[in-house]
Amino acid sequence: MLSPIKIMQVTYSLDFGGAEKIAIDLASGVNKNKYQTSICALDYGGKYIPLLDELGIPWYAFNRRGALDYKLWLYLYWLFKRERILIIQTHHVVQLFNAIIPALFNGIKIIHTEHEYQSFLNNPKDLQILRVLCRMCHSFVTVGNDVTEFFETKKVLPKGKIITIPNGVSLNNCTYADKKNTGKEFGFTDNHLIIGITARLEWRKDHKTLLQAFANVVKKIPNARLLIIGDGCLKDELNMYAKGLGIETAVIFTGARGDVKNILSILDVFVLSSVHEGLPVALLEAMAAGKPVVCTSVGEIPKVIVHGKTGLLLSPSDPKALASALIFILQNDTERIRLGRNAKESVRQSFSMESMLGRYETLYGKVLSG
Image 1 (spheres, rainbow, N blue to C red):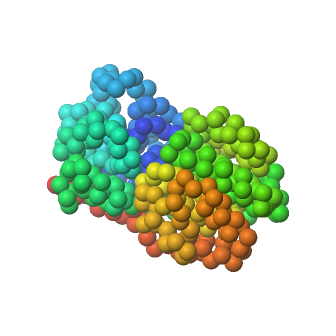
Image 2 (tube, helix red, strand yellow; image 1 turned 45 degrees about the vertical axis):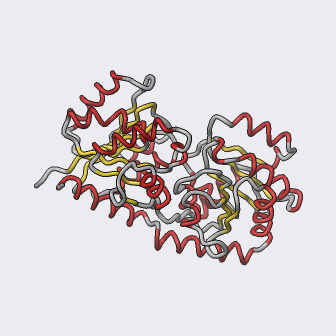
Image 3 (cartoon, helix red, strand yellow; image 1 turned 90 degrees about the horizontal axis):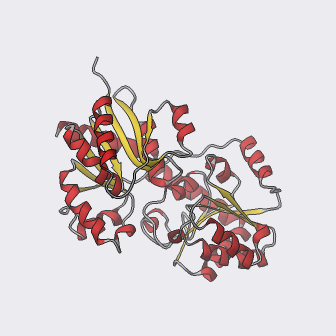
């Protein structure tokens, strides 16, 4: 019997985040008879560690020091060699930069994945680094057509050389007990109408526009509540901003959570107010849970949501339009149910976990045989 092919996912951290979530889904979801997987975080560990232990996925966490950490490269070289890794899959250019030399010296195949392009818009240095390094990779993957088109336009690789594999998620089947207990935790009753966002607390997610919009929503619908799920550098600033708007009693900052599935189950509507996005896993998870979604029309989101059919789209940084959309959804039960049902079916057909895993397994086979 052939030994399983050893693949290591290389991420920034083991904390809650879209790229980390996809890396863990890949590590846990591929065929265990064919692949043996692990995950390596270059900067720090995080809240995914208990899940990785539960899944039995070996993990490694380093503490990268500065832009050029030669000791880290040496550690990675010996880790790859000791574990007899055959493929590494890096997520974002910083991870590729640090892992590529240790991998090449071990004769390892390299697959690189970029989850968005906005971080390159004002960073020509990273774009040039990616342009050079990708020519040493065995495959370059993006999560959406817009991301692929950007890197083709910037001549990172010639047209047709970049592979697009959309993110995938599992359909959410939360129990009634999970839903009831989660609602109690936040003090919600059956009379509350709950809006939720899952996103890091950083500028590109534009929580301030959402808070401005919600201030108008709660004037019209006093029993509305806003759950902000996630952590980040703007946490204190956003808390103060909510207080300044006088809505602090109706807004709950949950911090980073490992039970997003349960939290999604209590939402009446899911919202994303981002000014920049790739293909957000949080959006796909909300749709898979059968939730109506209201999102800004940025990144790959318009490729996921058909306005008026599987969700509502609006321009970024427009609190009045966002408030109007949220009020419409909260006041129309029939529309909430219809949009949520259509959203779930859309994910089932186009963004399933099985489809994503199958395409990556095919890619792993091609890379090894090429």
